[in-house]
Image (tube, one colour):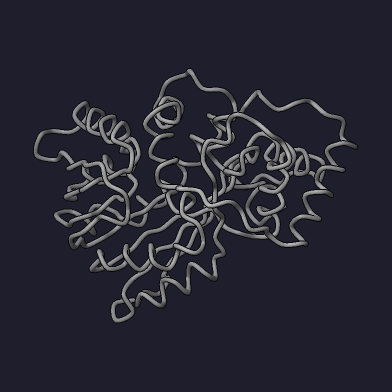
Length: 304
């Protein structure tokens, strides 16, 4: 199992090899069915077939062969249009529940909710009130406001954006329910490429999964150009293990493959930050059965 995968969701408890393997298989089938470490689990929970262990192992072996052979060139897809449509329609319906407090979620979706919340808590641990009060923060890819709202409650001047107008509307609604008028974030519908301005801190949480590797340098460079003091990024890490899980999931056809998912090598992300003049100053990993996210804090080289 990958470092932290078994312990992150269980407070460091030690699992037996069988339990770790069982969790990995559950993560493969439930979490990677559409090749998306978090989203696919939410979309397809309950849709996968029950198969004997021998068949599972055979499929894992087949997936491993694909990984060892390397990735094939895929058809050209307009990821931006696909993601925009998805998160304004059925994707919004699913994810606003996952990012909320409703009990209308299944076991897989609740695991993803908990994993995402763990990542948010780690970021809030880095950005305490003494550091961000009165500071400007850009939450790029804000979703339903799970990070924007607590940052604003700590006195930060938050600008939240998301490619989905439905998500932005939900974030604004939730902010109005819990924050006074003077702490309201400014929310707007926008993709990452068109964001502009200058902010003390820029956060981009679980968004790079929608951007293919060939666009990574450009996107990281653009986000870095918006930040004066700090850039916080999270992404699905590309390791042999997670690549294997992703390839295994791709062996299952299904209607839930609504968007593509892209894993990114930690070394490649760190190099993109270096090219933008930023150095990684802190890093964390969140891993549950169905949610995997590497978290970086980076600062301009002169300030790191």
